[in-house]
Length: 121
Image (cartoon, rainbow, N blue to C red):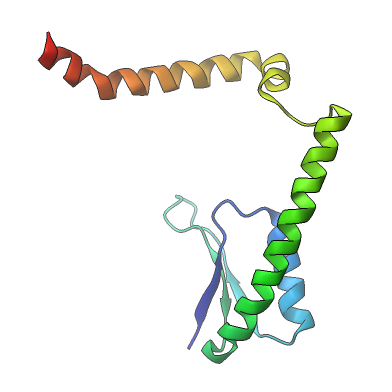
């Protein structure tokens, strides 16, 4: 029976490709389900044989620790070089997008707080 190894919500294409290559290198049978078009399901990487889960989980733990260190090092290097995306760089590059997101956040906060403000007044 199949067992979910990795939910693909917020997983980049490079990470999912690396995990698939890792499973292939170690002879673990897997398959991929794609996300639904309406966002109900985010897709996933599944192990065909439930008995492979412990071995695959151990491989994933090692991979995720190594990837975490690598990505943090890349981020630190980008910050040192000045190539990392920051709030300021995003604001300069896409000002209308940033303003729209901030206004949306303000509107959502106002809608949440409005009943409390009305009850108080």
